[in-house]
Amino acid sequence: MRFANPDPGHAPHSAAAVFRWMVLDPLRGRRRVQPAGPPAPRTAPDVERIHSPAKTTRATWIGHASFLCTLAGRHLLIDPVFSRRIAMFVPRHGEPGLDAGQLPDLSCLLLTHNHYDHLDRPSLESLPRDVPAFVPRGMGLWFRRWHRRRPVVELDWWESREHDGLEITLVPARHWSRRRVFDTNRQLWGGFVVRRNGHTLYHAGDSAWFDGFAEIGARFPAIDLAMLPIGAYLPPWFMEHHHMNPEQALRAFEAVGARWMVPMHWGAFQLTDEPIAEPAERLARAFRGGVADADRVAVLAVGETLELDERRRRLAR
Image (cartoon, rainbow, N blue to C red; front, side, top):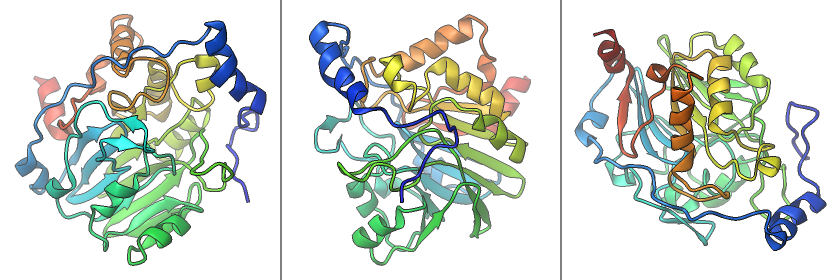
């Protein structure tokens, strides 16, 4: 079985397109991978605060797409990657915001898809084996091979499960999956919406722009915080099928209707042609151009914690 995106016009790139991207355009001088440049800024994590109970919504950026979130007193870890290198050859620029030993007791793990910058086996092996993992359909087999003792819950798009007072729903994304050469799209991908006691988080995973953001907002009309990807977009003719640029992420933020946004998927791994800090710089230019309300977007440093009640009070002054 192979999964497909909700957008019927979207299909995986043809072999000819991949050959053009990987071979022809570099040979013709039409594609240039820019120097990685500096990583995202990093701050020392406030570990005591992270471990303290919170009745509100809190998110700590570990880096790239990895977050530790607290939702009305429950801690959840999303796409954890602590490694200094992924897929054996892609180095991490800068240090992660937290390591496994600094984490509080977790209610669950959420894994959005099987790409190496989101599903990192050494990072998962550093975590307690009794913490259940919620994954898209088809990914359970990997976990049962790696961690036979870890409980695994597989979900389809729009399917929800209750766990430890959390309502966890897998929502669509416009992306793809592959772990090996011949397993393209044999495992589902997506984002997660998590609710508890009137608080709601949305982590989009990896996604290109698609009309499904509006449907997510319609089904979950009171999202407090949306974590949306802004990086890995050059060259656009190839990458826009899989990822968003900063302006598209802001458009997705408005479509979802969330109160706050944290940009992610930048500043750690150079997966495409732009420097790893460029997405945040481009986002800042969009704010100066009046594209979006900068007060509603929190560009975090790696290791920084956003607490929504605190931010609301600061902006109300």
